[in-house]
Length: 294
Image (cartoon, rainbow, N blue to C red; front, top):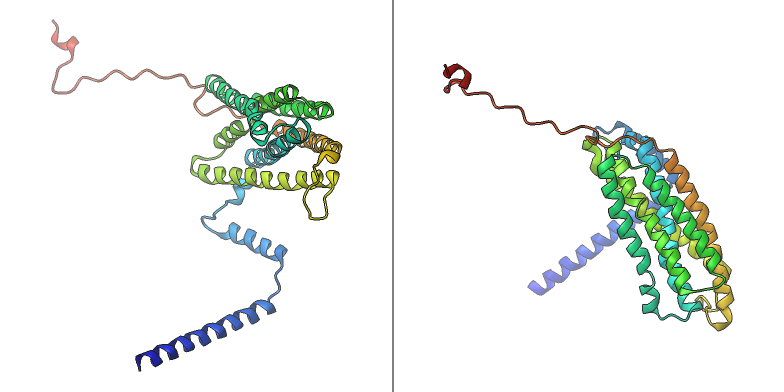
């Protein structure tokens, strides 16, 4: 008896779940999804909400908007290095995957050095705009250098260009985050950091997709859909990587224009000298020294 009751309950639950599923599918099929309409509703809701997840006034801030744009673009240039340089080295110089990965060390050393040095100088001077300007200029120069040496592949010349790229990149990402933190209210620091992190991630995804499509279009694909990088395709790989670097150069220049438009605001408290602690007043229970000494 218990077994039959359990079977009946299972069948009833299954039937009810099927009915709910079909009803949901019918309701969903009758709805018309309009991305533009949904976006308008989201903006309207954010305007009327008392405490929205992403305040629209924050997105209208020039510092946040321009810094997010620059971070979006500069992250796309970063992916052109980490994705295509190892493939280029393996195909043209005969480097193994391990060697190609180790050849990125000059870039990492450059990022570490420039990040630390720029941070110390910003702490001393309270000025930060000069560093992303210089960094993006160095990134653009590095991309042009990589595009020039790609026709005559060399591990040494590639390493030097990567070191220059790393020195420039280290003066951009973290410094722009400092600019955002310095340009928004302290209560909105968390939201501002989330916005910049979102645009950095989005820039990496979009950059990898677009540059990958350009690379695949220049190289060509085999019948199985894999990139043909055999001995016969060595010239195609060089041409494809050359195109990728040339496309990445104006992206870095666009980021440079965005940083130029940022209005530099001195860091909070950077120009304020430290005040000496006020002298302690004598307590009421103890008479002052001047009054007691006669």
